[in-house]
Length: 270
Image 1 (cartoon, rainbow, N blue to C red):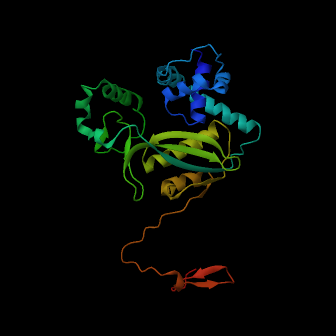
Image 2: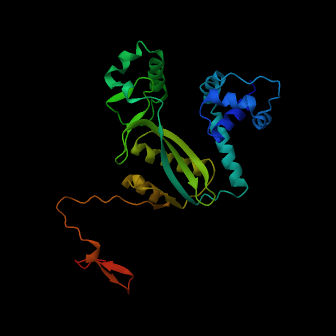
């Protein structure tokens, strides 16, 4: 199949939120506008749904086609003046893995399971071959047999789930995404991906970020120092950890000083 047509069909699925490839093909058979966009005539047969997964894990992955397409779009946004790249924001979204909690086994038994599961065995070989030079990821006690690359993650009082992080770097002025990184669901990986995306937007697109906005999860000392060394002002709230036994004052104990537009605590500090 023509790779451009295949890419157009996959793009429709992403834009309209059709995550099932079978459902995408069913819609494509009947949707005239989709047929027009992909160049399919009325009597032309649509591709089999398995074509997408084979190409996504084959020639598309090897050629990094999606990454090149994303970079081309960002470059065009920069050329036409849409992206300024001075004030950016970063965040990660949790993407639930296609695996359930019952599929998790102790990590030390994963190799044993791999002897009867070719997909897992192949995964282990690929993981060792592709990640030799990468920083070691946090090791969890149990992993899922159909999807060993996930992380068991929970946030706040929410129940733990298997999944990943989809990390985005966005230009504040235009709301155009200028960086994307997929990682395991780990707060430390959010910071690592943010550093990589910022470095890429400077190296690949020639942008000069001045500020970065993020939530408190990015308020790590090493990351803040990294931003400071590159003269990027962080707008990131810090999580204050008070030692046990310290006395904390309520808001009613503070006195407003109109001359300096500040508040003074009971110990005389502003």
